[in-house]
Image 1 (cartoon, one colour):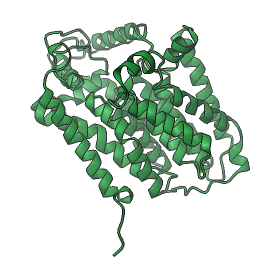
Image 2 (cartoon, rainbow, N blue to C red):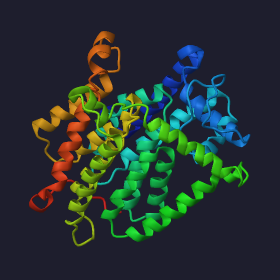
Image 3 (cartoon, helix red, strand yellow):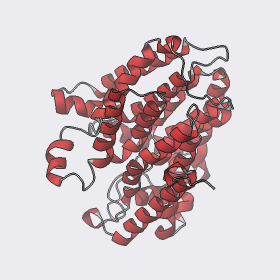
Image 4 (spheres, rainbow, N blue to C red):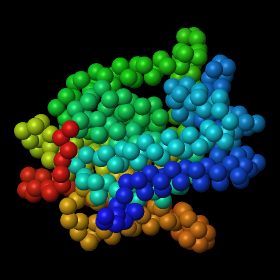
Length: 397
């Protein structure tokens, strides 16, 4: 019987991700008290409270300083879907919430199209530390990354209904998640995808009617929209906009930067779409690169991007690197620079003074990811797929 290294065993990944959920949840519950006397898992508390506020006919987007330290900013549908967590004690609900942000992501990684099993496992290990940062903040970004990857998996398998459902779910979790629907333009069954996405969106738009009267529903959406508009003006985050201000002293309109980034993303999609083969799809490697670009884009062009958000971007960096058959040295440098600055810089391995004076003011967490996104965009807009043949195995399920 041959010995199999734990690093090459999918079971080891499942154990590691489950252990991460349990350890981080136990740590948060043990600390109990966090910033300004609130809990150490306050994001989860905000998500959980949103259902009660909505069900009681209150404005879920209003401040509730006696209950939580920040505002609820997600969709009304997400608040309804948090109903089961509202019924659970925190000791159970927090563990299940963190599991929801870790285990679906691992499942999606282990079922990624294009890549072989070894490369999938390497991605799983690579993003684990970044996932810990997300879990320590009881954030939803692991789930968001899973939604994007599940959209890709379903499209590759020719399941437009499931793909549309995952893409719309991501959009109702975080607005930028809707952009995960754009690569559907690469696939043969675009029209069914669009129609089913519209039905999914309608269903989630009306989902709050389970707990609200029809008269109250428009007001809830007006309050959400008002919050998003105010929130858009408030910060730059670990984004392209934040980098431009920190490094170049520029303050261009956020909407303008997003539109330029969107134009580049659409140009990448158009360029790749032109190189579709006999099966109606572009080469496998180019599809992988495009999905990596989307994973990076939804973080880098989000003005509210913060450290826990980068589990999504690191999935994009990893996908870009491990979908390249023979990565050159410059790719390796970017890969490990992204790991060091994204996953290690917030840790105790970096002295607090370095973080305060260098890492945070200069948005260093985002810089390697920005460079990777630029590299991907250049590669996608050039017809390299027509000149080279990938050695990666495409899954035609």
